[in-house]
Length: 264
Image (cartoon, rainbow, N blue to C red; front, side, top):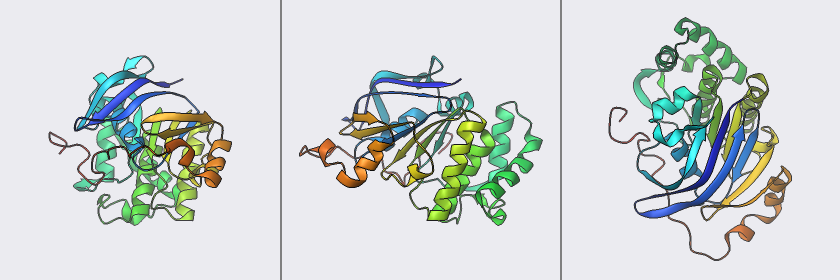
């Protein structure tokens, strides 16, 4: 059983506070949906969990099975079992999908020779065209195919906790169904815990949430069951946003997510 615990998390960027005290606990087999309007801090939360440079943690903690996640570099968070499906997957010229996953298996003391078979099986499972498997990572892929690629990586790597940052954006109906059902299946097959960030309830028609959180103005304003997502379809976010000025925007989502350094 894995447990990702976020307590009192406050964070900002460029001297401006974005998250104002987030409390969440995601356990194995659970699906937590985080919904909210633009600028509410959803993507900021995902990037801080995974350790993207440029953000400043002002208070609170993030732990995975009691281990201090905030003290870990990004690679160590991944090795500990955290996975981030990015809203805007990065193109990595010169690096193939097979090479990346093989390196991850070697780093995690897993059998790298099993990678090709696992990749082929996952590609078939989610309808990811095999001609894309030999391309450089995410290069010249459509937005939807990049999301399938992220889902394929999740299926091969078998993380303990997956953070999905708007997995549904850029997907057509068929691709959305394939990706969401694959993640849903992982909650049963390997006990995957999921923190799914989304604007819309359509993702949750396939990826059935146990808990729905409304994030607005950097705080969780409401928590409930799947019916809370249905309510938003009728009422929108007005009740949770009010007339306060908009929050500062997070880092440029199209910028290099790793920033300067060895991953740049």
